[in-house]
Amino acid sequence: MAPLVDANGLKVAGVVAFYMVSALVMVFVNKAVLNNSPDLPLFFLLVQLLIAVILLHISALFTKRIEIPTLDVKVAKSLVPVVSVNIIGLVFNTLCLRDVEASFFQIARGLVLPMTIAVSCAHTRTTPSQKVVGAAGIVTLGFMLGVAPSKDLPVSAIPSTLSLIYGVMSSVFIAIHAVLIKSSLPSCNNSTIQLAWWTNAGSAVILLPFVFLHGEPWKLIDLYSNGAWDGRVFLYGSLVTGVFGFLLCVSGLLSIKVTSPITHMFSSAARSVLQTLIGVMAFKDILTTNRALSIGTILCGTMFYTWLKSRENSPASQAPPRRNADVELGSTQEERDGLKYDASNEKH
Image (cartoon, rainbow, N blue to C red):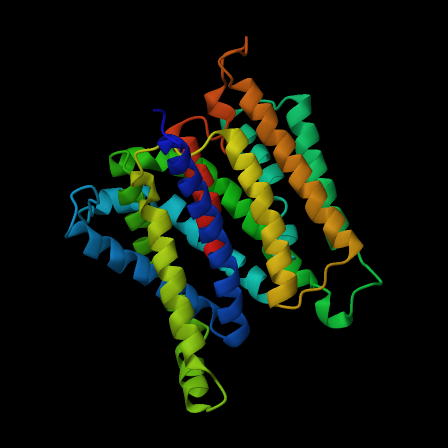
């Protein structure tokens, strides 16, 4: 008798659900904390990084599959570019999420795909196809629609120019990171876990002096002294996002090859819709026609790009796959790690 449920299908569904839930938790829990403590963005980010590092060390005590790297000055120096780009991107990401509505966050960071294509092509010295350029153009159009002035928005809901700059800079550094992460893996014995440790620990070291320069420890003391501040939101939010950040770090240990590009395409679409609906319901975000059209356009461009890449790398395709130009493709393990990074980036 044939099994009623395909076991492999359940595994795939479980992995897809994990990434969707993780991305949504990261966005909305972070947004709740940043709304509660807008003056502590760098300290909040530092706590999350430290939690991820601590949990990696604890996990290494129970399984040999999580290997903590030994401190090596030569390796540390070789990873300075990827660690620096990572923390700069996370800071811009955090500041952008703090200053815009949760549902608008995906619009503010809407240029991730065009930037990734541009940086990848510059790095590999390749020219994208006209269809790929068209997909990037559709996404860029969606971004422009979303940031265009609208009479339907109250003043409080209009994103500032600075918050849009944060979003664009976040997209730029995410794109650069996607390229650097591949070239950095050999320095970590091709271990994504070791690279995750170096990235989190190194980012925390770089961020720490800026937390003090920004005066956030003293702001935390002032908030704690103020009876109106609910410190539990900050504490629990830090723990939740820190744990999910850790889970995203170790998700590479899953024996299953995560998803096909098509599955990722539709799961991203569902996540985008859910993020918009939850933002409207939970945070009372304002969804105008322009914003809805913007999100839909960005989504269509991204889905078109994913479909193009899935066709390009299909076994039935006559042309051999061009792995060197595919940063967010999902057709190899390193490229799927790029998709995981996209999910993990939602945490800040």
